[in-house]
Length: 148
Image: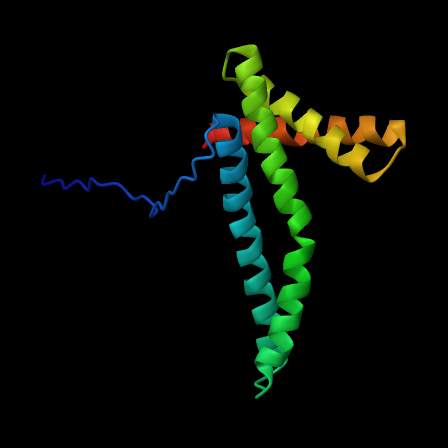
């Protein structure tokens, strides 16, 4: 009986760029800030464009879209900053511990959560809770990343 096989691979396009800051820690922090920031900005553009188009065609669509995009992109600046700090902290933990494993993500997330929380409030209990949440989220993301 004749059989046929299909063999091949599918991969997404990869665009990579590097900004050399002269230090691996700074390089990874800036890289994380830019890549995650690009994803956040794209999300805002797509969502706001959808909402504007859903309202119906308008000759003033740019008048509506641009102010909304500007307002939301500034609100994502915090997200970009946290992402950059996290990437830097994870790399820092890798350098300090001398190994690359899930514990770096946990410690980097905890330090990032504590730093961001401490910058925004003085409640010690909230800082500890945010450190725990940051470590838990980063660890879960690391484990999920290993599954794929």
